[in-house]
Image (cartoon, rainbow, N blue to C red; front, side, top):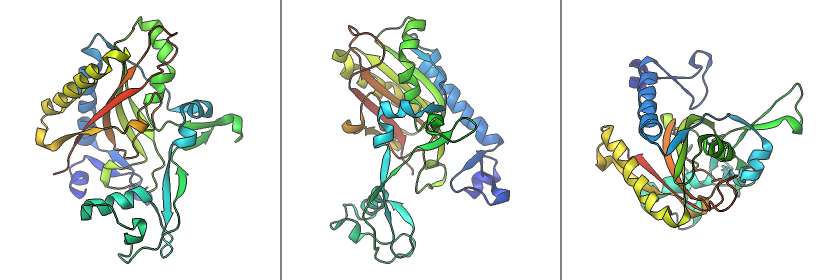
Length: 294
């Protein structure tokens, strides 16, 4: 972290006034590196292909969008509070950390997990749900009519513009829509340098196909995107494929809670083109290639 700061890659945001936890500003070298990666991705996924187009959708969207997508109801995480320190943690993160250290889940659940702050046996409250979306209000006064959310993912901007893109670009399956942009999640336990932040940038493409061809296209994009990382110079041994949980794989998905300052993903959606193409309405398959820390 200190080396990245000294070399001009990233600086703690607002550092001279105390800073914000897990918020980072990119310095002269960091911003050039980030822009190079974004340009390479855009060229590879969008401009070099005839079957993918790009958009740039709004960051702030009305509550109705997120109600329709299911985010208001399901985009949340379980929190537990330490009865000793009164600090709050995501229950799934505590369990994941235990599994990473011991190689198996805690036999007795949270009762086996030590308090990260004290190292002593933990005493925890029952898990309670916490919504991860950041809200804001538009207009001179804060009313329900003015309630909006900062997007927690870029995909929703693609879905709500599906009909517009189809009409104006004259596309039909198989085709994709991609964009690069900022997303925001009210992470309870941000940290791990730039790999778990509340503000982050996504490079995302949604690809729409006839349902009968979904498996073939899914494998095609796995191979194509994995090769892109290799061509960037990443050792294939430091890459793994992550299978997106089926329960989250839907037209308006609940995105993985682990966020990073820059992430790239592709999703495949089966679309029945006999229906009016107002929105993608079928299941999807999803994959990400993720560098493994060495």
